[in-house]
Image 1 (tube, rainbow, N blue to C red):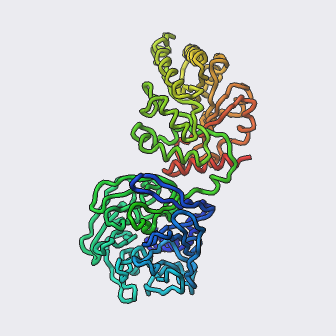
Image 2 (cartoon, helix red, strand yellow; image 1 turned 60 degrees about the horizontal axis):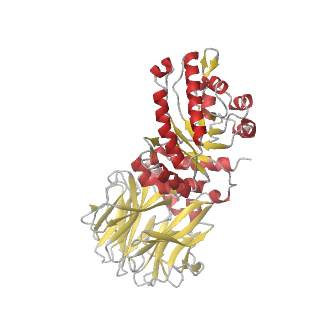
Image 3 (cartoon, rainbow, N blue to C red; image 1 turned 30 degrees about the vertical axis):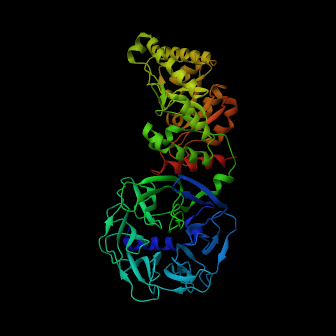
Length: 579
């Protein structure tokens, strides 16, 4: 895309109101994070968008913007939002700063005389309200910092025929602006240190957005973060000058130069002297969450905004499980599970999933955890296990000999682990394509034997199909043969409706042909549920009672974008809104 037009899009997006930046109805949770205890609490929640909290220097107020206007409320949530009079300015964006003496608020807004120009300027307005005074003669200009002595404004400006995006400063009383950065790409978020000697900012000059700092004259520009999988935005230094908190986007969520709303982001902190980042919290947010400095005067706390799409709250609730294999990129190893499970599982629950199906059993453990601990984590996340996938297929030698006694010893250990995890079902997730009736007979006997072991132990045992189970083997298919030659008391089937369609079969025909045999279904599509048009979900859901289906499991092997959580959210909402 032509860089000028890309820049124009960025300018327009940056100048939009909160509604424009959050295109879907959104709930906001204004929160305070305590860096000493590592805990956070909700100050107040709102059934609409509020953005970009400041904390006033006297500690009495938090400042937020809503629908282009500024409001204040008490940090303990004891007051409602109280509007700050900004005169003719009614398109404030989320770049506002309180001066160190608490007397003024600097803000960015479109020109009130030409609100559709999408050309932001910097203004100052008395804290008690009044008509703002414009500072920058040129636009676009986005304020992020005011010097401790109240003399200089620091802002990101788009200048020149190529609309280069750099850090500038100019006197609040007016005068010439001074360009401090000239690196290729976006330099943004400039903020003065409490001693007034340095400016912190974020820059994409290395190819990834990182945190930088420099002297207030632009000298000694120094990189401060070196993230390899995140893009770091809006560094905010604490009043004691010791800590810097910033917002970090996953690289699979956004391009390095983009900071948009309604994504999975992290709050990170580094020592002001430099060092490795500490992840404080992962949450659903982004644009509007931490755009401006929100530290408390004592440097012990800071405010931020967490978001949640309104539809996640208002859509009808339905019982539906999620196959945790879907989030293997986030939870697929013991290390990833330990690092990410708290946030990922909470987001799945917020999306509307009510249960889970595991896919991480190995050697007596799940995701590196004991079965009991794994089951407890999912239960507490609101995603109790309804089943678990694992497999021990027969070898060619076992298929040929019909002797699978060694395989059964493996299943004994597996059954004990699943009982300890608290799952009511154990599902064999895969078997290789079989070639002959003899192999079909051996495998059916194998399934029956495992199922009998599970039943005697108090577990239901099932078999999960892919596409090859619907291909011809002599005059039958693996699926038909297994259903016909296994005892319903011992073996149920979990049909993957997408793979059935890929295999040339009709899920509904199988549900009608074999009533009562499909205790579970995998509801899946090529990507997000319902988007491909390949699978007739309406008819499938209508036939669930006849098929004996007690629950369905949503699985996504891939999303249409690298953002699997977004895909799972869209799938959940599609299913929740179905008749």
